[in-house]
Structure formats: structure tokens, C-alpha cells
Image 1 (spheres, one colour):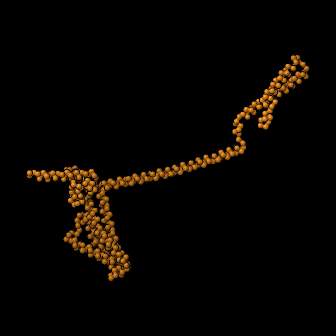
Image 2 (tube, one colour):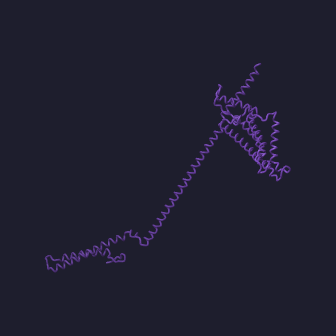
Length: 385
């Protein structure tokens, strides 16, 4: 009978187990056959009973051993026992699991931080875009408002009037500043810095008449007149020259070599600068007033009410423009285009600052009037024949 080694222990093999079972069955059968048919001596019965019990215990032990061997064989053939981890492997697995969980936590934190930063940048970008769009809307509305002001003749006239007033005030301020400057210089030259305040009046006595002349020049230019009249022009020119020379002499005398104490050229120029500013204001004021007054006079404003005329307002407005175009052609401000003898539509539009539709109507009216004039002239020429 051979044995099998299982986990270091020697166990009977399956063949040996089968032989033992066969022997047990033979012994039980022999004992049963040897028992007499009659109830013999009690001693023999007790001996047989002991044998039977011993045989039964042996059989049960061998059956249990057989079952154990069968279960052990099944367990040895099961591969799951190889998956059982050792203590070292369990420690390594726990360490790896902790590291994986830490990596997962760091990844989650990094993802959350990146998402928050991205949301913040997106919100800032949205605010910047909204601010840019609002700024664009503001500039668009400003551009549209400026375009309406440029296309509206009344608004253009108002803007021109504001420019006229601003230019006049600035030139007048330059003249007044020059007078104040020269008044202080004349005061110090006559009575010294601590002298009587009455010396401040000396210089304005020469400069204020110049301001009066400036105002008269400007008003005359606004009304298309010339100041002074032709018969008084020489006297006014002599008066202006005298006042200017007197003002310059009073301011420059304290630093001239003969009349005062000479310092240097810079000091002389500083004393001559205020009278020069007054001269600049005197020259520019009438020129600016005449130029702006001419634009205001020639600017076209559409007629919305025909008044006592029987014609429609558009017709009256067109005829008014036709009259102004003819006057501009006669004065050389509008040149004929090509061989038509008439200015172009674009030239009319730029000259009056009106819409292209209005300029086209004026050009068409001019063509009709010109062709009608030529036709009537030809008919009157051919009539005597």
C-alpha cells in the first residue's frame, strides 16, 4: 500500500483506501458467518459484540479518512488558493492603495483649482467684452449724432455760430491780456512798483480805442460792410498806427538805450510782446468775422414753410438754391464741369452741404433753365425769318 505526501504529511492513497474498505467488508461477513445460530455462551456474544464495535469504528475512521482525502484533493485542484496574499503582500497592497488614493485626491484638487481659475478668466473676459461692446455702442451713437449734426443745415449753422463766438472771445481775451500786461509794464516804468495805481490807466488810454476799432471791424465784416468808409479810411488807419506805435513805445521805452536802461534783447522782446499780441488780435478779428459771416450768409437751410408763395416748399427751396448757384458761378466760387457750363452735382452738394438728392434737383433745375434759355433765345432769333 503506497502513501501520498500532502503538505508534508503522509496520507494513504486512494487505492489503499479501497483495499481497506474491501477488507472491512470481508471481516464483517466472516464475523456474521461465524456467529452461531443458537444463543451460545454469553462470553462469546460479548466477544463478538466487541469485535463488531471495533470493526464499526474502524469502518467509520476509514470512511472519514476517505472523505478527508477526497476534499483535500479537491482543494489542491482549486486555483483560488494561489490568490491568497501573504502578510508582506498585504502591506504592499495597502501602501499602493494609499498612494493611488493620494494621487486621486491631488488630481481632484488640481482639477477643481483649474476649473475655478478658468471660470474666473471667463468672467473677466465676459466683463471686458461687455465693456468693449458698451464703448462701441457709445461711440456709434456719438458718430450717428455727429453725422446728423453734419447733415442737418441748422445744426451746422449752430456749430458755426459757436465757432464764431469762441474765436471772437479768444481774440478779445488775447487783446485784454495784452492790455493788462502792458498796463503793468507802463505802471512800473512810470512810477515804479510801489507807485500810485493811477499809472495803470495810462496804457489802457491807448489800447481801449484799439479794442473799439476791433469791434467795429468785426461787426462790419459780419454785415458784409467795410470799416471805415472810404472817405474816413485814411484817418482811421493813421489813428490805428499812432495808437499801436504809442503803445509799443510806452512799453519799450524803459529798456531802450536812450530812453531807459538797456538790459538785453530778451528783455526788449518781453516788453514788445504785449503790443504785438494786440496787433495780432486787431488783424485776426475782422478776418475771422468776415470769413465766418460769409459762410453763415451763404449757408443753405431747407425751407419748411413756403410762406405767402403758392409754390411748394421744395420748389421754393430748389429755386433759392438755383439762385445761389448762379451767384456762386458768377463770383467764381463754383466752376463749370466739362462742357455743360454747370457745376457738377457733387460740387453743389459740397458747396451747400446739402443732401445729394437736393443737389441733384438743383442741377436738374439748372439744366432745364439753361436749355429753356437757349431754346427761347433760338426761337426769338428765328422768329424774324
